Length: 216
Image (cartoon, rainbow, N blue to C red; front, top):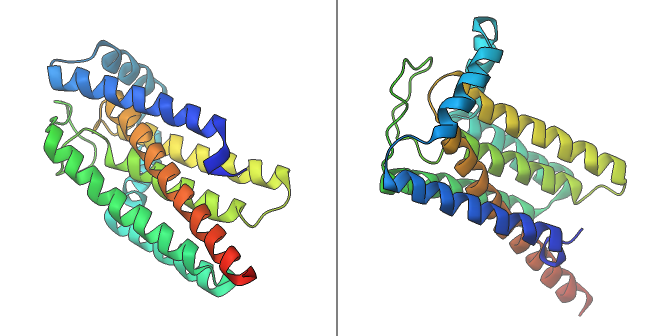
């Protein structure tokens, strides 16, 4: 599937943009969002203390150091296995500038964290969730650069499913650890998805131009 020619991808980009703008407007108006409390209560009632060590490990995985370590592995593998310099560059720029974009959005919007006991230490603001947004960017881009080299539709769907599972779990972890509102997670996913599509399209465009240059 070519990202730039997929109507399905554009539909989900449009949907993500609507979700992000709607949540942003609601947060800027101020006051708690009704569904935040309901969803938070539902999730925290499902996952009890026994699950906390697992979710705390995801906190480390989604930190700046964790993202840096994972990204280093991805870039090295792209170099060693495929010599995909375009993929290396696009992945690095998508992650690095995505991280910067998240910080800028947090500082601009200025939403405080939930006023309850946090189960892990947090220092930044709340909206959009950095772990949700960066989880979406990191694992969607990893899935994308893997899928590019796969021929089997079954394998492609398997990779996409595992990426989805990791991203979703990363988002849930922020609610379980009581450091984010569900609306922070949803906005992080939405912004991260839009950001990914931009960079996946850039990758396809650069690969296309490189192939044309090699043929010409």
